[in-house]
Image (cartoon, rainbow, N blue to C red; front, side):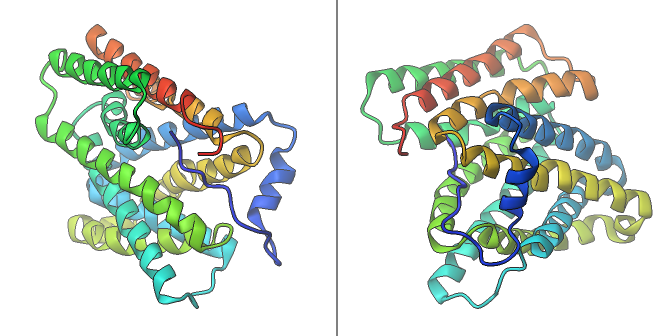
Length: 300
């Protein structure tokens, strides 16, 4: 249950992927995935602290703007693409931008652990879609049970926040499908860089409309750069290197830990304590995601 972000073919010029390989060669690939998960969730916690200054739209705008700037500098992609490739890049970027906007709108209203757990239903649905195995039906029921527990123990959770998290999950599912097409039509990180630039173009107008000149305060810019590095640049780089050394199936199982990590970071960094039914709901979704990923064929 993962996006295969491995790249097609070597680059004739400087390759950040090759640089990452030399930098992280001594680190076990499982540790790289776990570090990437930790980085994403710490980035989300930092982002939530920015909401009071620039709002959720402003935070998304900063994250995607700086992530696009860094990736464009690293990969220096050529805009000379055929019409079909540009269609895929635009679809990827718009989906990525909407996914981030919806997720941050959810994060402004509900705890981090719950937002990520609900959002994770998107990739889980993609993993289970079309399956004819009885075991996968069990994983789907387990995830549904987790959602029921989440709603049972929601204790005043904002309904709009849950709906935004579901919308983000839907975008995440589409992101996986479009991301696979992006990998087929572009080489190395060039498609990612161009797609991130498109996502920034989607999000920045919302951020400017909501926050205006507050976005250019020095400490806000520094925090936005930190969020971009923690939430996008670092985890994508770690994932790329890990996927070069472990099967996507194993990667998907490790990624299933993300809701639990989000709940833990929410507790430790944001002081967002969950009720016991909510913790059980998180664990149900983690177990269902791991089970679905374990059942994937190695070549998927």
